[in-house]
Image (cartoon, rainbow, N blue to C red):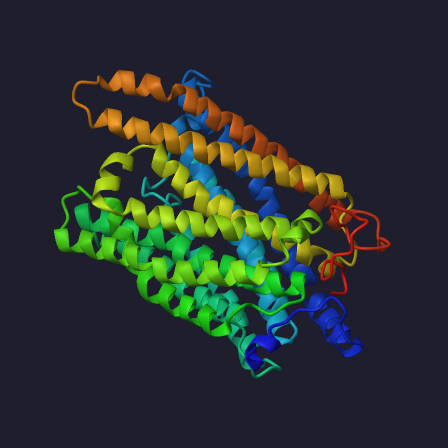
Length: 491
């Protein structure tokens, strides 16, 4: 075991001096990070309501048909943006700030500015969502908020970037953990990506086919250069902490980071296979997608080898259960994405529900599940109380896990068959649409299951933030009779 690997080991029993600085760091994070978490959960509920309405309208289009602001063409992009910029991004920023403060062993700087930034972010998401529902969205996928609101997000990202640089510069440890590589990459990559996409697309600098290229360069990299680095950083942090063992290989993890940085940003153009763009540009996207097997393989090996001999802990630890589910989903969605970039696969799955299932496997099964696990780990340290109910946590896990599994399986199978039927000139298009209806009902059922889990999660967070003070006698475990290191407040 290398010295750097040993440095990354998390233990459940910390020396007294470690507890002092950890408590100091958590105290500095309590208000800004807690505000980001609470806001994220609020937007999770809003996005979930819009998602269920959109799913219902897919097979029952007359549902709420007389309400123009609730037509499918409005609630679907409203759902997408409240989920991406409301829930996922705000949860990601909260986790990112706490992880960086803990890994650098310094207090979170700019607390007041971050609280103001979180307020501004909420205003921007609310304003942008209103504009979409009012029919004034941009119709540019993943960038449907009017251009005006992008300046709000850019300003907050600027504050997050400055806070990250300040913490990294003032860090009290010389070793740079693999999680820090990913976190620092995300705060440098995504603001540039977001500003460039908005600047090129919305003011009219690009148009037509070139605008579509820029759009999918952005849309694909939201997952690859924003959510993926934050999600993987979280997994790399939580696994050693919860298990009390080092990551299998620090050097393998660094290889995964740099190959992700090198290959992922090229992959977006595979979404435009068959479009009127240069063939070489599509081929570059396909090559970049296939090269992603390298970082995905290194991450999968690292995670599996770290978990080896510890899978029984999934029965006890709520954080570990969500985290491992998300880590396994990252491998699955990445392999599926690389294969989908092949022309022979893309010509069947493109423009079908197969693509929708693939997107949810990444944003939900991977990133959202990891964020659930991270909040279950971080919140007790911020608020100095344990979760109110292990049964509620278990209910949350099983409703969302079964829900996203049903969602992905149903739309993947139905979408693939849909693509085969659309490519058959002898099958009328209306017959293809009728064929998908049962699978769309499975989508609605899956959405209801996930909605139940989200409400349960919101109740748990509410009780964590606003419930009675005082510590429980021990960590909230799924099997209280079994001790699980690393779960308690002081770990």
